[in-house]
Image (cartoon, rainbow, N blue to C red):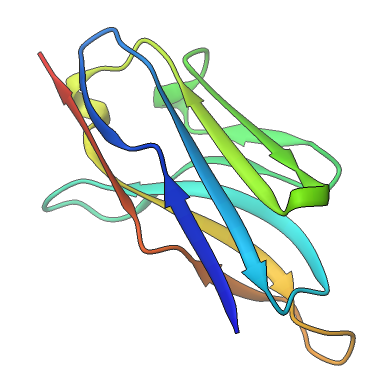
Amino acid sequence: QVQLVESGGGLVQSGGSLRLTCAASGSIFSINAMGWYRQAPGKQRELVAGISSGGSTNYAESVKGRFTISRNNAQNTVYLQMNSLKPEDTAVYYCNADLKRNVYTRYEDYWGQGTQVTVSS
């Protein structure tokens, strides 16, 4: 069994900061890419930021220069530092990991349960 558990969401004023954390646990052999997605009401889920096992990163245009993704491979954890938050950043944020459960399985996508981020104007 594999679990991805997010934490760090909440309510913040426009211009404020939040740091999201996602810890993967359970039967994990190897993790490839990890990332953060978000889904606002009435909208499709979108990629916010991704990071490879080697540390290469990519960001949605809307968050470049404001958000920073990082990871701790030893602890199977990924972080999202969100600065200069805007009301349009309001959404449920989901953690994603592309991982193998053991040497015999293929890489598969796993998702966290989501954490709410609300930015007030």
